[in-house]
Image 1 (cartoon, rainbow, N blue to C red):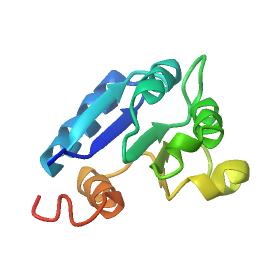
Image 2: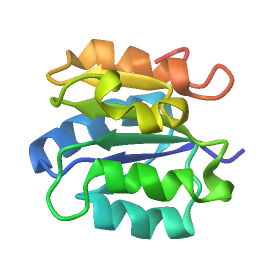
Image 3: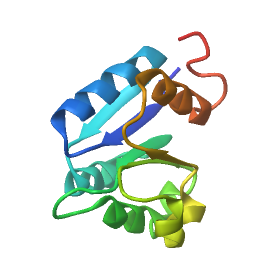
Length: 128
């Protein structure tokens, strides 16, 4: 059985490591991208079941990544969780239908882990 892939994107190395280490508890394959350009490169080759995406990143923002995801039909089934310290989902209405969960930073690690579990396919991570 193939483990579900989760792509996590954040330009802050410490947060990227923290979130990735939490997700690894869920018996998933974790792919890390340190910015929007790296995320798009990964998405050109992979179709993860879940994308966890920071919005405020230099050069290629999370909004740019959401635009790429929205225009790539192969990624239609992929769920998206946005992590942001910028406003709320009302600020990004254009992409609201594409995003299943909006999370304001900072977020408590156990709350983050539960939100990820809720977005995974089937009962993956139920025992974590």
